[in-house]
Length: 341
Image (tube, rainbow, N blue to C red):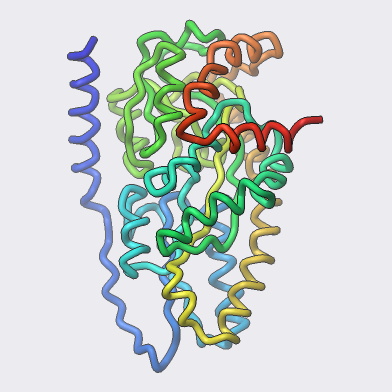
């Protein structure tokens, strides 16, 4: 079994290296005297909640500053991979990114609290936590690393796909391999508790490693499953809503502090408006993308029942106590109190 896992990791790395050829380098030179250029790098498709919101933000900023500010959006990891973009932001190579909460755990491990399975049941619950004590605590951890949170964007709840068999009960995961996002020990342990083998990988390589069967499956939101065509190489889909995926829109604090006051005000008000719009789009697109995937006839869909959900929770609940020291027992308990009926 160890030999198989080692081979999976080796193949995953090889595919990742091969996938680097399509990346672009931004050579555009714009004089600071002419305009303020903000490079917004992200890793998902344009036709996703994050992709559409980034584009809308750029358009509105251009209009409201009369072209004085140009937000250049780089989707699909064309500028930086998800394993590179935080360092790029800290170095000033880009000015805005929007990584998943999981990827922030390399800087501040407590962000992994959002990866705990079945912690949230709706976007409204996520908003309550983000806008309260826990959100402030997590944002403060970013500020200590010269990062400033501008907004929190939704993607949606995650489903599970794979190419081997229907995943109905926890035992169905046994010996399958699943790609997991980088930096999250919680996500790795989640699949280990289900009897599967987690393999870290970047989002831009996900389709290729699934198509080539380097790994058997993955977990993702419906907008990502549809926009990245993952359903074409993953014939089994379990609608589990077991985990939540959200994004933190970040900027470099030094860059932000040095912006002219009037420009900063326009950017802040525009980001607030776009964030409300993005939240609506995330819910809408989740439903629409699910319907589109079903209409293709390419996948066998299983909707998790209440009894099956109890079985999954029973297996995964020990994650809460296992990571209480890393995440902070006060963080977990504060969220549970906040979400208590």
